[in-house]
Length: 238
Image (tube, rainbow, N blue to C red):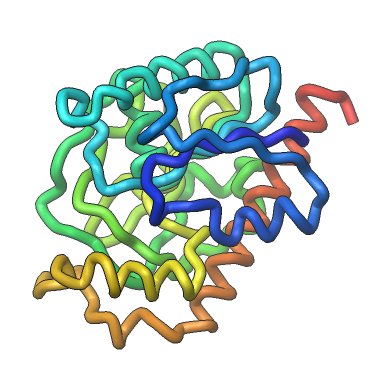
């Protein structure tokens, strides 16, 4: 499988996804969109991964490259590519599909529990997803569910935590790819944002939680394997 990654911020890298790619022996190409707006042809990848970032998907005047990125995502969806968006990546997908993205009433920072929806129970791409699971959240925005998409997971703080569109496009509001190193960088660089809030944990509550990291990575790897299986069935016929 050929993987293409759009990175929107230096802090939000592939993380555990890179471990999975290396183990599977797949190829990966990346574009740091915040400093390079030259995208590769959709003919040159099988899976597009759009990573997170602190900007809002609606901040096109402040970050002009967001419009170019959304146009590129739209083209990937039109070309029937498999697409995975994480946090900002999910919001960019939603925006590319015509749904509004906007500041949420609360911020979610830390490990929070999600619940799988009934609509997602029979979907192959989310096969193996438990009814409840803990993931790391780092966002202050949310989005409306795109028309034609299926909601896959929700939390007490945020209704749209995951969705599937046309059996190929997945949006995750949370960060299953984060590693312990990522969490330490968050504390170092974003500590001033870790103020009081009903869904904001303090650093001592979310660092050094290897049990939760392992669970999140297991969920991530399961999802990626499901994507590979679906890709082979749909595009290769295996």
